Image 1 (cartoon, rainbow, N blue to C red):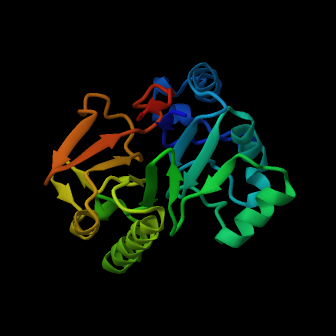
Image 2: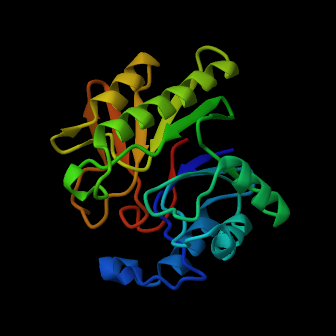
Length: 234
């Protein structure tokens, strides 16, 4: 029962979004992702996907991508990214999944999951560069909300018992170069988290895979950085 992670799958079975605008590494990315996944992940394994799962705009439009994800080996635990416009309320998402026979995909959203003694927690986070955030977005308010969601997730992990290894998964990096999201870092410190993973960053292939800040290791797991092969955590 291995645990893997890969963010930013950017599936586009119904929208045909040309990811090659982000560079040649994205050539044939869906086929490469599926091939690497099938060669790496078994049915008893779990894969965390921290956001930017599909380019679809609605749940109905996302069905092809969700079906593709469901067909791949293993259990998938997904969380929301900035491009997951199809994402609805948790209740509507789960109802849609049940109605369409999507059985191997779970949500990480204000909750947590235990996988073979490791507890999976997380939230979306927010832009590390405020200039790139959507116009008119209240930066401070959104960051405070995300810190609250992270606390909800980590608090829920207590139900699995003490002494469990807690891993946190973000879409946006909580720490990147000189940027530090103090609110998210403080929540991780409060709950004794020492490992986190993040996506969102593309094209920076010379960036170190792991950086450390105040005793927390932060690993980049964007799909293109990983060359579309799920990264094995344990």
